[in-house]
Length: 504
Image 1 (tube, rainbow, N blue to C red):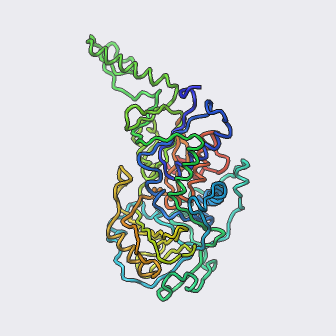
Image 2 (image 1 turned 120 degrees about the vertical axis):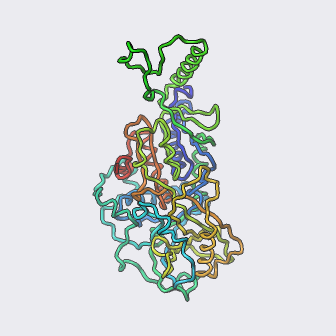
């Protein structure tokens, strides 16, 4: 079977979501199509490097229960279990630093740090109150609905959604906070690598049974390597348009009076044609014939000449850059209001302490400052001996650059992060440090991702807007989209909460 006859699936974006889609799609296709000649082609497009933005520059914190009571509860619980399964199958503990962790919320006495340039007033977006800007520290809460295991989902049991859509705005304005009595207070000495004299309250908000961590860049690239081993094709190029081969845009009709009432499907002027005009029309007909011979509904146009890809199905999974598809011809029925996803600029540091730090994730809330609640400083020691520190989520109008490698960090923000970490911990001495780092989290205005087929299309899909939970929910999103691509429906998860046309 020729490559033109084989079904072709194109995935745009090689972050954790796009790579997870590629991995689960290839895994399924290999099991169902042992013959490579008949197996559908899967092509992954990335304009830079795999995991070059948020998927390679985030903390990699995983929590099974922190989304309980929200529309992402099912997705988070399922994906948390899927992380453990992937780590078991592919030696994730050594390949991408998967490990369970204890998680703490530390209230720290006020330290003299200057708040970010009045960011809450001077640079606030109109929808910022409904945007989940960072991981808000919460404690375990009682599960309100019946628990459904990953094994039940994988046995094709579909659970209908019961959430009231009218509750979505209030539910996802921030991560739901349970009653305070469910939090376990512990002595400051429990986290010995923090300065105990500045901690006013230390609570354990996660345990090794329900919180874990990964190195997201290593995870993304390991899953990509597995997918390529199964036959995934990768192309380093930028998608500049997706043309629909059977579509002709509306045109203005120009003709003499006697044909004025007769519709024309091609712009035409009734006049004697010159030889040059005839040649131009012939070139256009030949070009159209070449595209039609592909028998594919779409053509992905790339920024590199000669690499355009005829495709049957296309998934857009490019994070904070997902709104690029609004300019593409085939996505003309998708409106900006259906994917209100913007990049939230978050800063981070990588520290190399002299002493070994145990598997304890800490959310440091600094009393009397803006670094509280959703703006807590997040500290994640990693198995390789490094410590990832993130915070300074600037809710400003700066949009992600066209090239994810372009520097986007604020020098003042990274300096504040370094100062704060030095003030809360003597163990995190910055003898070796990588700082001046930032990325854009793809945040949906309603606080939940889009995981959906474009309703009016033959084979267009969007998976983006996961915000601070992209690493957690990436694998489940990948599995769900792979089922949509292959089966036409998702049986592992109920995706009605994440459909493109839910809100608008």
